[in-house]
Image 1 (cartoon, helix red, strand yellow):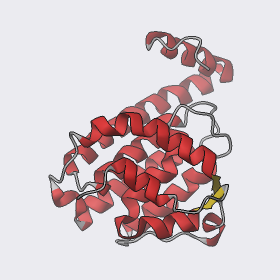
Image 2 (image 1 turned 90 degrees about the horizontal axis):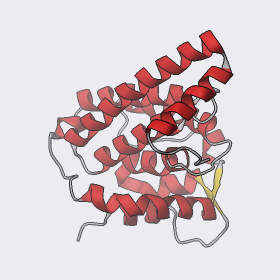
Image 3 (image 1 turned 30 degrees about the vertical axis):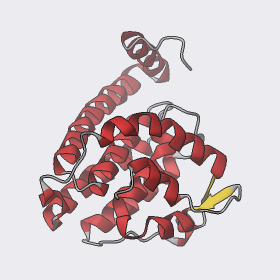
Image 4 (image 1 turned 60 degrees about the vertical axis):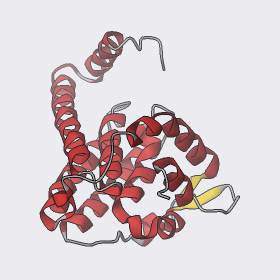
Length: 214
């Protein structure tokens, strides 16, 4: 019986009850599911609307490294020592997976193998380009703007894990929207400074009905 996405995420954390989880141990636990599951796990802290200070910039750099590996045709990810030694607290990791599980059940109903060309060398290179661009956006020092590109990487990870090319293309479409959003933010930052960015953020939250939410 095929494991669910939530089960695979939990399996990546391992059986150890220790408080910290090294990225090296996560890499060992994802095993043959490689890039897809690893991207899902590592993007969660930034992709979800929960406080994760200090994650976005170093993990953005790490995603650039992983994206370049995909571009070079690697089938299994490799972590440099500076990344392998980094840790995540088990509490924060399990909290993120708990939140993700609430809507992963809905995603699992629509994700299945199709358009499998996405697993070909061309498909892998196409996705690696999107991952690198999203990762670069994550590293920009603009407060409260890292969730969108991290979510795109998370969605690409789902598509890769399930070999669903159509889902990956949908994630890439969201990535184009992220690029457009960042273009607007950078324009406002140049024209009006950080105050303009913060006002724009509050305006967008108001449109989405999220006013007053942290």
